[in-house]
Image (cartoon, rainbow, N blue to C red; front, side, top):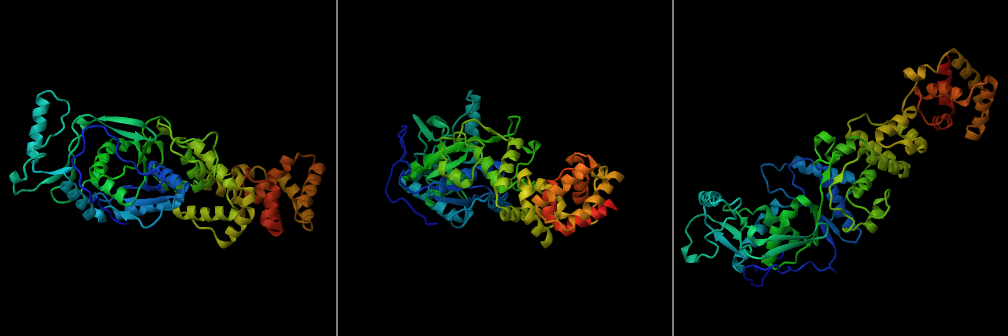
Length: 491
């Protein structure tokens, strides 16, 4: 990632609300996702990454990934790995290498000193005790909140002591500033509420507010799309852009995700981590579709591919109100995508699901059979556990042990009917057109309805009462296995 620096001189930021320069609209779109590696990838973070990915990919731009790992005590390699796994499972590919914010700390410090040279920042020698005394005095005077005003802001350098110092921004003290947000609209901030924030600590390490801006600038980010819990940060970060005379990116602060009860999403609502949804068996394409619609809309679009979403995704379609997680809608969306997915691709993702959920892998024979019979089970499944349940007849081997409900269908009369049916199937052509008349003939001879005949066949072939059609099962497992299971059940 190339580093860049400003070379022109500039004075302290103006106190007025003059609009800062914006990233050129003609520039290629560059978005980024910048999680902190302090835990798993939250579903809200997954949606934020998805919005950035859709916006960039739909405009031929770049989607970058930065790990904001400056909190060395809480950042862990395991959390970083979990974030990468979550994004990979969601199918969100990024451009270039993953950027470590911590590795760029020298660049951040360089910019802080550049601001000193430009006069938009200053050295502050105030101690923690002096700052605490200032706030205590303000509180005693009845102020509910007081912005610390450092006595070093305009001090003569000749007065500087030989002691540690921090570098603070020179925030505007009068007038108003504003954030023109693509989702929230114009947000006005009273400048007297903005403090001279610290950008470089006394130990030479940068603060988050500085590091984020420097990284976004150096990475060429044109659009910052993130959760609206960062909206207040935008006003302070915009000061850094102004201080360095850098173009400000387009802001888009999206509402957070709430649970079905309208409260902030938490563990009590169910899974909150992206990887948990893979372990629960949701297909990635369905998750992308559902998360895309969670807080964003485009006409009547409900079920769509990512390629279709890329063509129409825009910031105007994002609502201001928090989105509510709806598991029924998620399952319905995922069900549509399972039906839409190519059989081989679905089998590949099922294999990955089994590994993630630490379940036994499919044998080669099971995989071959499942691929052959995918057509008759995927249309009715909403998750991979659903798919496995419906494909049960393909994954079991003899002897078939029927469950309690299915066993009731294998009484003496039914077993007798199966004994009559079996020899008639011996030499039949193994197609539905050939098999259907044979079963209908048995129905006519016994006076039973087709459902009464199908019940013991289901029990014999699958050991369950809820299965795909008896013809589909017979065709998928083949003549020899069908006859063997019928003979076994009729004994």
